[in-house]
Amino acid sequence: MKKLQIGFIGAGLIAHGHALALRALIEGNTVSDTQAVLAKVYDTDRSKAQILAEQHGFAAVADRPADLIDDPALNVVYICTPTASHKKYFLQAAAAGKHIFVEKPLAFTTAEIREMIAARRKTGVQAQVGLVLRFEPVFYYLKMLLARERGNFGPLLSFYFRSDQEWPLAGSFHDSSWRGNPGEAFAGCLFEHSIHDLDLIRHLFGEVSVLAGYTGYRSPQAGQGIEDTATVSFALAGGGTGNLTSLYHRIKGRDLRRLEIFFERAAITLDGFKVGGFDCRYRELTVEVTGQKARQISQAEVDETYYQSIGSPPLLYPTLVSAYRYQALSFLRSLRDGRATKPGLEEGLKAHRLIDAVYAGARREEALLKIQA
Ligand SMILES: NC(=O)c1ccc[n+]([C@@H]2O[C@H](COP(=O)([O-])OP(=O)(O)OC[C@H]3O[C@@H](n4cnc5c(N)ncnc54)[C@H](O)[C@@H]3O)[C@@H](O)[C@H]2O)c1
Image (cartoon, rainbow, N blue to C red; front, side, top):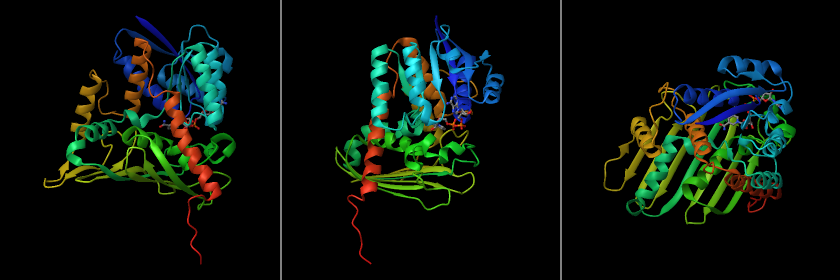
């Protein structure tokens, strides 16, 4: 029986999400031959650590990060703090020989991420990054469809991806003023939120060969490096083009994605998708193939396809279907089996490199044709 003693650094919103996901797996004894325990939590705000511990049954609250990172009884650390401290805690946890789950974005710069990669390789610990959309059944379904129907659909022409979120400073879901501070968050909607989308674009459509991007700062909350809009155009290495529109707005409670994919002989529309939803995670998934009646794909069909593919045992609290559950399941299974955790830091780095290219291009206004007044 493998024993995983898990410590959390950071006890805010996403820590609650991970703790809930882990608890469901632990209570349901879902990862067989593994005993996982929520052992310890540290947060600079001790009251937040105490709330997390009480709500989810952590055995102890640490007074200092070192009391958790250097605790020989722990072998897994979740890093759930604002982005500015990810690298510091990652390097300390790797040096202490802990396996690590680290939230996205990994760090502010690709040079820092390379440092983290070198530390992981040197210490031999496992590390997974929280690019959670990869574990959402509907995106698994789309990836499978793209591979299976390639001959039928014809070549990919273009995709359009829109990802929007209520300003995550003090809104319906988030209470995190740090997201408005570039010293803590580094940048705005593209970096903090749409790193998920850039990773998903690579995951679904393969590598990007060329991109051009533009960032905007329209709302009063934006500025000082925290953009509220980003528009990116892509050329894909495998052929085809695409667009991403990412934005922060002030529409209460709205946090949705829309994806349209066009092939020579088919079109796919996913609309009203929200991550971490409960019963309803998207409003529409339609597949149109020339000469055939358009097909609406139900969430039940999507979920069943996913369960079968990952060999998922029945999960506790089935209505709380969420990509965070499958992300945790994948992480624990990899640790149990001694397999590489996925997505790892190298995958995270590739998404960061795309973001860097957008910011660099937007700063220099490269590839933007200026229209004379
Ligand atoms: N993958 C996802 O879907 C997802 C969703 C939300 C957040 N995130 C990421 O998770 C991280 C945390 O976001 P959040 O929404 O939970 O933020 P949050 O503000 O809700 O929580 C952050 C917590 O960290 C604590 N903290 C701050 N600095 C610290 C430090 N140096 N050491 C220890 N604790 C510290 C704060 O007191 C707070 O409790 C961010 O990197 C964010 O981008 C990922």
